[in-house]
Amino acid sequence: MPTDEALVASTLAGDEAAFGELARRHKGKVFGMAARFCGNSHDLEDLAQTVFLRVWRSLGGFRGDAPFEHWLARLTIRCCYDFLRAAKRRPPELPLDAADSVLAPDDTSCHARETIHTALARLRPDARLVLTLLELENHSVRAISEATGWSEANVKVRAHRARLALKQILASHHE
Image (tube, rainbow, N blue to C red; front, side, top):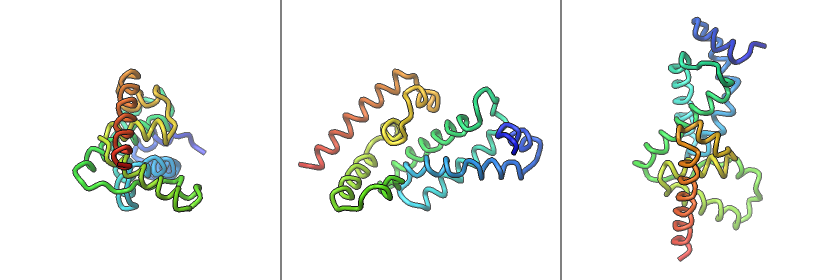
């Protein structure tokens, strides 16, 4: 089985089937990450397609100094951030959440999830991105810094401000 790096080289040499294999290998990871930012399956399909289109166009920029999977994750995060900024111009929707199928479907947990998702949707795109990556995806500050191009200090400041904003939104929801 060829490595991701070998598939990248083959793709750059004109082998479209190699790119298809890369997409097949990493489809689940891209869809899983993108699902945290989308309100419906149509948006999820569009966002994932945007990610793979950007991968196709940017593949020549893959230097191989980090694993392909890391490069793909950074590119996916940037696409998700772009999606969130564009989504701010649209009415908020509840994001898909893979954890929903794991949690018990009682009314309390469903209401709590809905409240949190609605509050997250009201955050600025950068705040939603940093909280989603830190709290829902369990990325480290360093990984977020590398993926977004923000300094680690900036990630921490954005996370702090995002938590405060989320707390205010949730407090106003309970009043």
